[in-house]
Length: 456
Image (cartoon, rainbow, N blue to C red; front, side, top):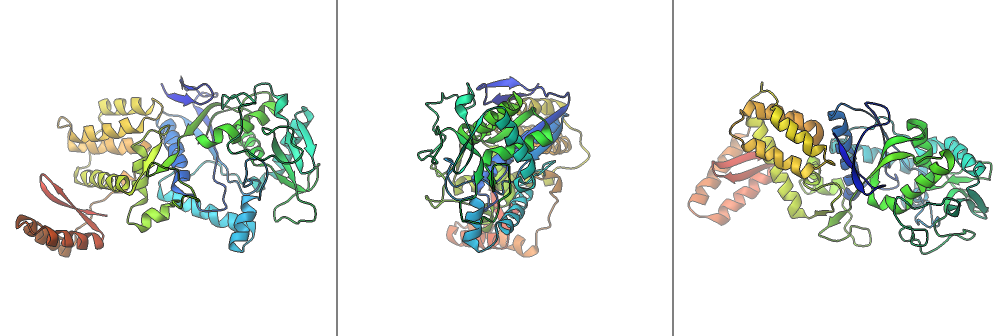
């Protein structure tokens, strides 16, 4: 039995798909105007764990993730510049070139983090026709009105608008909505189609029944999820910042058009904090995966760090916590290398592992179980290896690729020299040799059994 926390009901519920063993999963993808930062990537690691867990339980997952390459304005109040146009102006390229470049950058990061490629990856600009057709349907049902700058969804026509955020209409301020586009009836109303400004030629604009313009941000996900997963599907994912605006508006659009909530389960991951504070451009602490790699960390170290916290808990990122994660991952790799092949999966540990994962993806307990099993003297090392490789179908730490690496003689000599200096209590000189070893791409760890040399 799988239990997942459903934001819509604010409780853990037993998961049963609409269609037997097939799962429809929609995940909100990146707005491709800039590099994804590690806070963004936290969402995709969580969603990858979810997908892997479903597949581990025997489900076939149709995983859809979109690329937002038009319509996401700089303000949630339906004002400001399109982020794609902003990126184009920043780099002196076309919006299309910006989209292509940052899609490739995102896919490189996802591959480095061992994130499985979605089944379908639609781009918003490839689905303008579907978005126009959906807006026409919403209009026919009487949920729209026109202003000088676009076609808007009238939230007053939907009696329980905002149920996902569990706020009444007076209480919803949709994040930082302090301004309101002229002609809007309510701060909670949102754009379905925006008109191109008079006398301005946008890079991305299309002819519609209402005039030349471009789709609003929210309509793309409703249109594409309906196309690839149907009017109602199983699970919709995103970060908690999507709850009050984006996902609330997706629900409103789909209910207006089809008379039903698009997804039965809504899962959201918590924020990443940097040194216990907010990560943001104004704070000057935006880190990309490349930032981590440039400082000597493998990409999967960041994935390991994410596994140590529940997806619904805030994760506090510090360089110290990342260093601890890298040490732990190195230890796991080294342990696996030393275990012999030809073992069998330990069914008791497998059952326990599956139970903790099936309890709302409890990865911290799963990782604790990994280390408990490694230390269990009642199980053969070969069986431990087979079981770890089975667990990694969910953890995604690339354990099947770990092979024993021959340590160069020069590194071995340096390690021996360091050990002799430590015995003579010449700590400063010993530490200099440690740094020399690390500079050559190796790491030395002191254990009860003596020093271990590990490839960084």
